[in-house]
Amino acid sequence: MISVQMDSPETRPKISDFDAVVRQYWPRIFRFVLASIRDRDAAETLTQDCFLRAYQARHRFRGTASVSTWLMQIAINLVRDHARSRRIRFWQRVKDMAVDCASLNEGLAGHGISPEAQAVAKEQIDAVWRATSGLSERQRTVFLLRFVEDLDLLEIATVMGVSEGAVKVHLFRAVHTVRERMGGMR
Amino acid sequence: MKHLSSEQVSKVAAGIRIPEDTHVRSCAECTGEVERVQNVLTLFRGSIRTWTDTLDHSESLEALASRKTRSPHRAPMAWVLAAAALAAAVAIPVYQNSKDQEVKAQAERDAQLLDDVNAQLSRRGPLAMDPLMQLMVGPAKASVTDPLKLQGVEVETKQRDGGIQ
Image 1 (cartoon, rainbow over the protein chains, first blue to last red):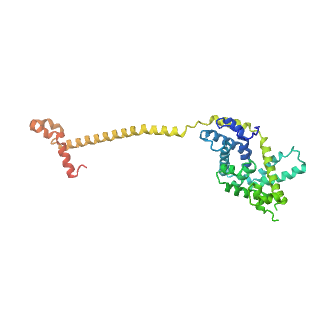
Image 2: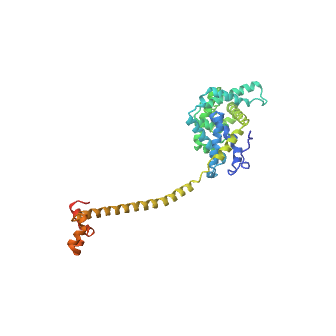
Image 3: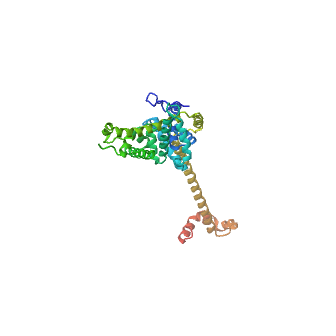
């Protein structure tokens, strides 16, 4: 298992120390890819592809963006290519989603939460997980970058190569859709 | 008091600033609605992080190391272009020279053929009778029967008549 490190300027590895880059950013890239395509094996492969591409292109990295932004850009492109090339709509595969949701909810146990609260939380997580399946590719990417990877709007705009205004529009639509699917919206 | 609309709640929950931000801070109902959404999203993030952080990636990391080793070292594009330019700089003159020589040789062969044709046309008797002809006409006339000497006249005549282009 790889431990997650903070991405502060002091702990950011240089691109020249590529093994350190892999150690630092593997969990983040893998998490984003997995949440995007919902297939663990494919996510492992795409994460490898992401770092391999970065390794091969490391001489062209100019440092205008951070390493994590650069890696995330590669990952987004790979996820997009993967979805397009294989024409897989993971979002519509309820069966697979059920498996993934079960895996997701394993994390809830052992956190001092009562069984009732766990049940409610599980239901809510399932609802969000399912709701993201109905989002467009861009909305889903923005949603995951914002609420799983904790990127701010400007970072998302940089990573996706779109304007901050466009990010706001996608994010608003994504959150609104998720709220509708969650139910209980006033 | 006018509460936030559903769209406004979604915007605030998404972290998008709206003009009604001050209302959210002063209205318990709207704050509660925004927090409810944000709490679910925080739960969602936590569950994904907890789950993925427990996964073992050692096989993938080994595979990546192996792929990195196998990955061919790509020569920088500038070197590839320089090598291609050098190859072209050497190959083109060689090719051009060979082409020129071929054209020159062909021209020589054509000229030789023309000479032979002229020689045949200018001959006044069969080849076997040449020595005899020379004896008959004597040294002064020998040059007239010499095919090489007649070449210019014959070619000129033929060209005028449209025989040789």
